[in-house]
Image 1 (cartoon, one colour):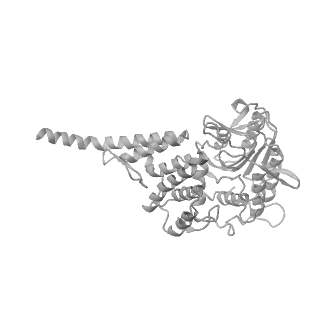
Image 2 (cartoon, one colour):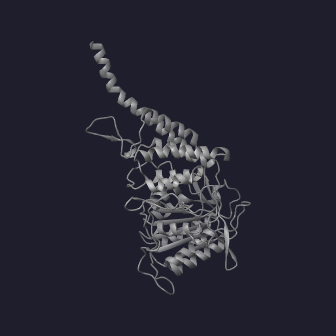
Length: 448
């Protein structure tokens, strides 16, 4: 009897740690698979975690240990294996052959539906459920979802394995201040959406001007890089250099930038770009604001983003490129708030794409002219070619006419304009879909 009692006591003491180790190991394996875009492996590993610990958790997980010194798993992160499984199925569907795509979208939707039915309402869950319905053509379910959702979006999910564009879109655009769900249109005009900014009631600075340049703020600087020329065949943007001058003119006229604070680099080598960046840094004050507009060739190599100089002859030669982290890191010494807009093709190469690298520190916003895997395109303005994103950028700035432009509202307006926004000014329903900002240590209404 004593032996049985001792064995039972030891089992009770050991099993919580063993239990925790099992789901933790499976979850970590899922995160590692997601990091390399192995969505089949990620789904399987999330399922392993579910088999040991079935339910998602919105709040932090307290690990076994002394009550006086509680340890929180992953610094208090939500535990979201079911959400992760649904997301992995969704990402599989995005890259699947046409014959398999619908079934994968439906499987993804089924997982997200289960979470919604449990009352686990989060912006991320509703966003991907709606997109899964869109991918499978379940328009009726989209409409039904819009009529059912009436509660607050208080559930938290682990979004560490989402792309920067997805996380930025959900955090900055899909979430309203109240967090309430409202019925309304998606990209097809059906289904649910989350409350978004009313662009007819913009909260912009009163320092605007009805004629002439908008009053300038001398702590704002711009570094504009436009590389039309390239030794990399079939990859250059022939309109990039002229886009750069158009951006400079618009910033001075409509966004409160002094002409002397706008550095334009047209067809620059990697060394020339960094030299100009250092010169800009020397002139900038502490806690200033920097807008970087890059249009040219961008690549992601081994997880790092690079901007190609015109001296680069191969997409793998980083010696002729500017590392994005080096460029941004330069300005952190003065606590500069950096807003980076990139107009570059974003082909998938071994599961990686330009714009994928996340910042290590500082305060920054990243915005891309198109979605991962897609190419940027051009249109015409005054009879000359101009990047579609550049055209939308300068037209939206002309509408805002402010020296204090809120980043999320600005990018959302660009998104609407490029997708048509009811006006079809820039060819609505085009394949080029710009990203919402990925924000790092900046609020959704941070101004540039």
